[in-house]
Image 1 (cartoon, rainbow, N blue to C red):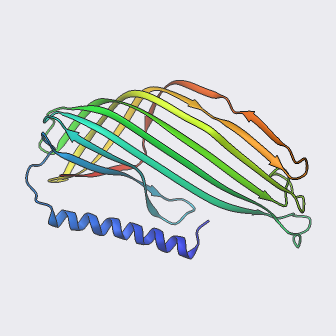
Image 2: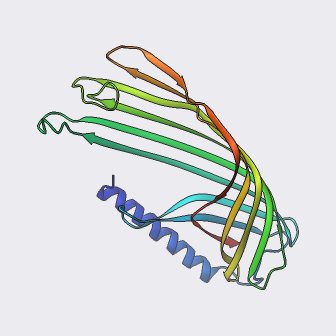
Image 3: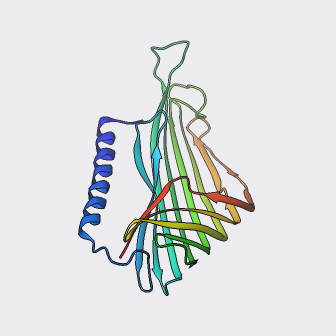
Length: 238
């Protein structure tokens, strides 16, 4: 749910990012076009949020690379996401009754390291292949008021559902390209094919009717697959 305050903060963050990017374009010395030995690149993956929500940019991933040679680079990436929300559910048979509420918080943290080999390409285009390994952890907590199960209304009821111990690991090959729109500033895209394992953790549920906690394992999954970030990578070379 968007409030005037949250929309204002989102707008300010977007404007600050765009302002910083424009300042960099004019202030950074524009020498060599593509990254070379001992260069450092810093980039963010931007997702354009559309649909029912107001249009805004969201940074989903930060990545840094260090070029050991003109063609070989080490890479590391970091992604963190925290979301929260509160829903109100009313009884259709009695609109004047108190609604039951569900308030949830979700946290995701992902880290990855890898290596890239860049091909000659063109003056502005730098295609590459590479390998990456990474891991992630996540958790979720939902608190309900005036409900025992999060599905139906029960005045005076309360429950807490919490998912803990969820984690993932992956290893795979990456294929991508950087395109330098001006010297030292590029956009790019990338796909990954590899193996992943996902442990969904345990779900603990408590309510004030039974005064007990029920714990269930959510299982796990694994397999090979193709993945791509739908956002646009935009970065700078130092």
